[in-house]
Image 1 (tube, rainbow, N blue to C red):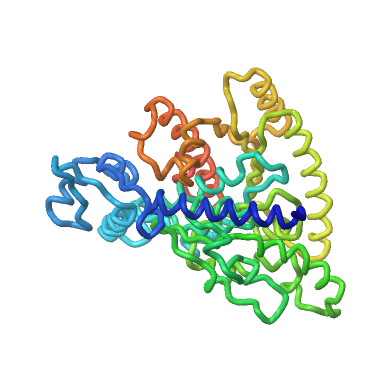
Image 2 (image 1 turned 90 degrees about the vertical axis):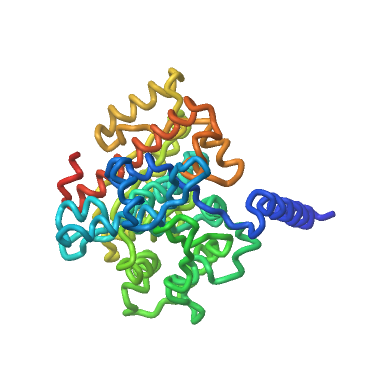
Length: 404
C-alpha cells in the first residue's frame, strides 16, 4: 500500500473511532452541555449572597432554579445571566451597580470590542488550552464572547464538541469570510452558538490552510489601487468588525506557525497573549518567533496596517512549581520582561489533562470528579490567570473596577 493511501486509511479509521467515542460520551444527540452551578457558585458569580439568591427563588423573582429531592438549588449559566439582567434592571441604566451585574462593554463610553490573540508558533505551549478556558471564563463572568479557531488542526473546535472532518463541510470556518473569490460569505453566517450561554464559536478545520495557499496568488495578481481592506493582513480584522457589535470579547486561537492567518490575527488584535512553556528550547524558540514577528509586522505597518495593542503579555504555561529548572527559567523571563509576564502562571495539572480526555475543560466538569486538592489547585491557577487578563481588559476600557 502506498504511503498516502496508508495515511488516508489511518485517518478514516481514527475519525470513525472518534465519532463513536463522542456518541458514547454525549448521547443521544452527541451534543455537549455546560454543567449547572450550585447556589453558592451562582451567588458568587452574580455577586450576591446565597441567602439573597434563595429569597429571589422563593419570591419568584427571575428564573426558577432546578431543585433536587433534597431541595438543593442549581442554576444553568442561562439562569445566572437572566438573574444578572433582572438585578441590573433594578438600578439606573449605566450605573456602577447595574454594570457590576451585566458587564457588557459600553461603546458610548469608548469601550471597544477586545480582540485577544493567543499565539506562539511552537506546539505544546498550551495555546489552545489557554484560549478555550479564557473564552469560557469570560462567558461565565457574563461577557458576550466569540471564540475563533484559526488553527487547521482545530483543537479548540474539538474541545467545543466538534469533529471537524464530520461536522464541517465547507465554507464554515473564518476562511469563508476572508477568502478572495466569489464564494466569500459574511462572518455572521458562519458563527455558531455553543452550549455555553453567551459564548459563540467560529470553528476551524483543514480548510483554513487554503488561506496560506491562495494569499500568495492574490498578492501576485492583485490589481494596483486595490482597497487596503482587501489586503491579506486586514481581512480577519474586517470580518470581525462586521460582527463586533454583538460581542464584548473575541478570543483568537492562532495556528502554531507564523503564516498569513497568524499575521491577520495579530493585525486584528487589540491585545496579545504569548504562551511559553518554561523550558530552554521553548524560550529559544520564542526568541526566534519574536524576531520573525517583529520583522513581518514592520512590513505590515509600512503597508498601512495598524498595530496598537492595549496589552502584550507573556503567559508561563504548563508550569510545575516544584521543578527547579522551570522556576529558574520563569524567573529569567520575569527578569527580562518585567510586568509584561503575567503574574500568575498556568500550572500543569492532571485535572485539566483528565478533563481533556473527554474533550472537556475544567469549567465543564464538577469538583466531585477529581481529588478535591487537585481540582482546587488547578481551578485556582486558571482563575488567577484569567482574572488577570480580565483586569487588563477592564483597564483598557478605563473601568474603575479594574483595580479591585
